Amino acid sequence: MQLHEANRLLDPSAMSLETGYERLPDGVLHVACRTDLHGCTGEMFEWWFRFRPDTQKYVWWHPVDHVFSDWLECRDGTHVGSIHRVEEFFTGQPAEKLLIQFRDAGEFFDAGAYRTAREHGHISAAVCGRVGFGWDAPRLPDGRILGGRLLHIGRDTAWGCVLRSHFFIGQDLPGLGKSPEEVAEMVPDAFGGALLTHCYNEFTFLSRFLPSLFIAENRTSHPVSLPW
Image (cartoon, rainbow, N blue to C red):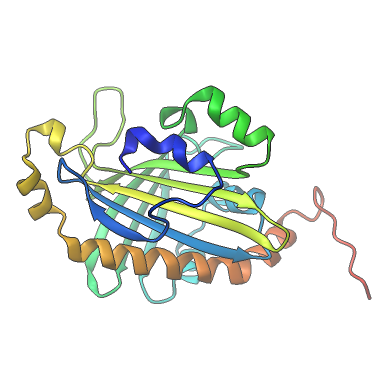
């Protein structure tokens, strides 16, 4: 799947690549990971990014790989527009300093298809963004970060939330004149496997504490009655 085919993620039926990675014709590395978040909802998942975890809570998210967390350009009530400045390892790979710029879903999906998917319950969460490698990652004149893309799409079920995470690493390199071979050299296959394992582990860790944290932080708006 290429980035321009992202609308496919709005359909809950099985995809040809739910978990794995592939090299696209232009050299971009596409990584897909499905994680089952038991006891979670799409609302909780989106809230986690609005909650803007500090370094301590970022380490909860992945106790092995996560190192540092800070937030820039934040807006009240939304994760869209904020930039997550992080340092993390990727399953044994060297530590990376990243800028993750969260963007409106409309940048990646057809507006009508996205609205319909929300209304019909085909998706319950969408956290999308641009990924820059290095805290000094280049930007376009309008402020958009150059690098890769990430799409986290959630769907609520009776037991929890199905999360589809798709990454397009090196997405902007072909447009900067890099050949498929040069892109592949800059973002090697080994990183695809490392990112896949990292993604599955971090969201599995998150699912273990997110429901209780969400309830604790939202007791006024989401009161819970215990059965005892």
